[in-house]
Length: 350
Image (cartoon, rainbow, N blue to C red; front, top):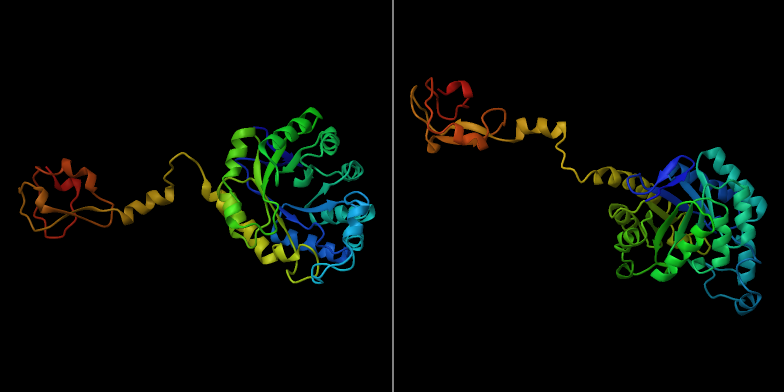
């Protein structure tokens, strides 16, 4: 399996989980808010922030705009669909500003392109990889353009069949892409727990021999942490400063406290997963001396007495003759008088 190398940070099995704070449209068209989100993601310990590179012209048809001119949910929507897209799009200049802010803060800038022009824009900004959204797993023209840049690719798999995933991987590789990672994803906001099927990560890794992570749309932190525990090497989760803010995705996003939990908990889980090799640490070896048992006498015996199993008991600490060494003790005589409850030493035996 080929790992992703994102500017020296290896991503894949055996590597610490790569945590992506998905800002997407949560900057609400406000670059001051965008900078605060980048700062907060960095403070939480995320490896990268991710945006969505679409414009009013590159994503939605004119007919769809005409069909969506009003909404009843004023908290998540305002005006028409076209007005919201215009407000929430990241312009080329804003792309440059966000990328520059990420460089200054020391956090990776990533984005999902939704057209070849946006692929070119992100490439010009020096992104270390391309993230392809679930909706475009069958957009073969876009995949070919992404692959032609020769960079690693993170491909979300929401709504897709195994055959569509296989075809997308083939198109990317035939177009010259770098290593590809898949993100198991359920494109429902939020999905029911019974529809998530985190075991699909292991299936995808086995089927395609690529690194696999999880693009999360659940509420809270339990499911992304479970994904890491099951071996997910990437976790992508929407990120906001305040779940109550107006906008499309704030309500399903992680706030800073939750993102910090995912980052820190994910690192702890990765460390705790450890190895398939059975290892008893030096600290545990030292604990043996305190918590295991040793031989003591159940009753007082005189010098020369021959020890029977009924004369012996096992009590803490474990710094003497161990219970599994009993067979080397029974039938031997003692060299001195020994009181009830006294610890037995090898030097006491003939």
